[in-house]
Length: 317
Ligand SMILES: [Zn+2]
Image (cartoon, rainbow, N blue to C red):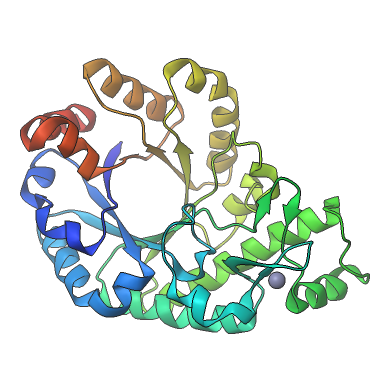
């Protein structure tokens, strides 16, 4: 099983990353958060970091964050796009715009395609991770009811887009996310067809998961846009993880049955040998090809570089 390490601190944190220590620990890949607003102006710094990591034998994957916030698990991440293109944001069932671009809006798709193509062109990465692509949903408030979604729904179902989240609306949203992923994959393949495309759906066990539009693992794993699906395992304690194991196992078997890779992304602490062994056992029992540990900065803060290297080596060997 490969071990991946997430770098989430942005451009300013890159100078502090000890690539040699990471490479010597047996970690095989870096997953690097690429923030929209930083990458607009400082792509060269990111490109230099990726090049250095690749020369040290590490695979690199870009995770676009921001980018209209369609791919954004954290609403605090700034997105200049959201402010400059408000007319392309999702519209909720109260008629209000949400700070999240609509995947069916052709103006957003054009901008996204061009931004991601540029990123793929400038960064010599091995692939891209699409992190939690989703429609807005919060306590019964859902989107999107923009003119493009209404038009597409009418064209597909031959009726008006309902005001309630009916099974047809949920299906429509799932297919919209699947189409968006095809567009995202096409953008990176326009640069290099070897670039891999990985999707990380929102956390399986969250209460709003089934309203995100990215809740059908079979549809995602079936998609030609997806080479691997990443399972996000949050900061849960052992008993919580145990209670979710059946859900995780089902999701893993769906991915395996489609012949796609499963990655397991853990944010749990790696405080001691037992917690390291537990994360490894979890990923192994699910048949994961890669265990991604998040993230570098918190591991260094908790343990220092030397101990972090030993922990990662324990995971890798
Ligand atoms: Zn829409």
